[in-house]
Image 1 (spheres, rainbow, N blue to C red):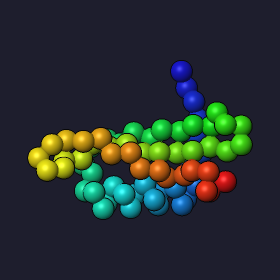
Image 2 (cartoon, rainbow, N blue to C red; image 1 turned 45 degrees about the vertical axis):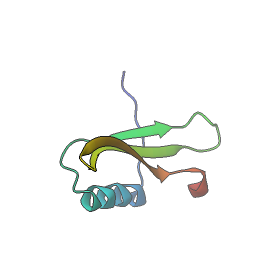
Image 3 (spheres, rainbow, N blue to C red; image 1 turned 180 degrees about the vertical axis):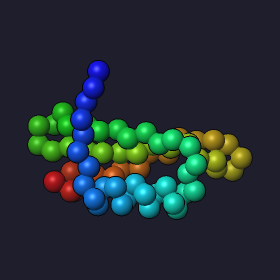
Image 4 (cartoon, helix red, strand yellow; image 1 turned 90 degrees about the horizontal axis):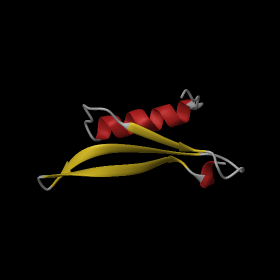
Length: 67
């Protein structure tokens, strides 16, 4: 299945800033949701080491405040 999402420059800049701040070397996952009918949200997930354990971190990139 193929699906397109559109990202703004601000979203790309935010994603890149998070990658740099957390020194992410592996892949990230983008979670896009447009089911509300009002606007879309975009979140980013990545694995991060915290106190010797790997955790999954989810960060809001775009939420209802950006509509």
